[in-house]
Length: 390
Image 1 (cartoon, one colour):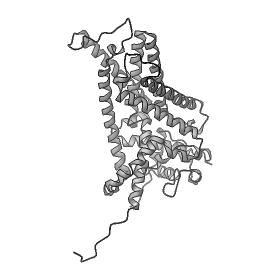
Image 2: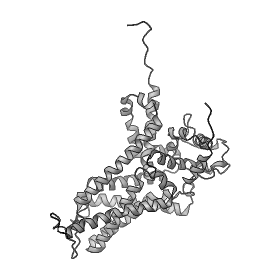
Image 3: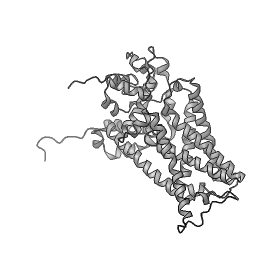
Image 4: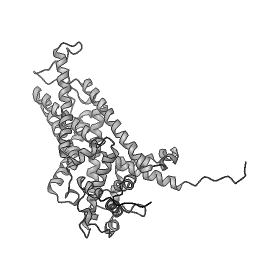
């Protein structure tokens, strides 16, 4: 059965950030210089060729785009200035959209109007919920009498009761988690295909350490041979984000309190650590994208700005809530708290499962699935009983 060339994929990938891909004449220089390529994964050359031929299904079945850590060496040395690193980055965005069957991810990657519409819609959720809560209280609904808006001092949990907020956070977490799980299942089906059903469960369990290792450490990044500072900054970002996620999703009842703890209390230390790390890592990323001095920042897609911008804005508003709270200013604290929650809800609902955030998950997952396939291939074939044997 012959394969037909589909030139429309190149045009489609340009919406996802591919640059000058048609200039590539497949010389192989990018693959030769890439420190992560091997005999089984000859990217980015192979991926560019598949894009030029328009082989969508073959691209969706390979984990190769996720095995690239975007050091930029291939683009720096490309004799045709075909920007192969940008093609690999565009493929990761495109694959993220393909894993999402709803089509919402594709809209957010290809339409800035859709992005702003989504941000506006999601940011209104906490505002509407607060208006409903205080409206019901004004109507005298039983059980809400104790939640008065205090103006002579800061009483955040009277303005936004922590257990009500926590309930909304957990519901949203479950909904977003189910979205991510659906996309992961689709990714698994594409990458593993029929082979996935034949691999023993014990191999998946034994190799799960591969997923955990690369999720926590991003160790493969160190094999790029580039400056380790970038790997360390990324590690800091992940640690700060994970710390804040645990504090908000798992420990909000402890984290959002009207009690002013001593400076060296664990609650404050964890919050300060996450704040400093997130402010530094996202600020550095945004400055890099503005300056465009490094290869990895020369062609930033609009979607590349969302995750660091959301985290930076959420961190700054969180700092201001903290300052206003300790200064004893009620209304500035309440209003900034609302803005902070608006930013965080917008980030989570816009990014989880369908945005740049997913790279933190899909990349180690791709390495895990690839290792599972390698382990399965190493397994000895089952011995066949002799013909005529009982």
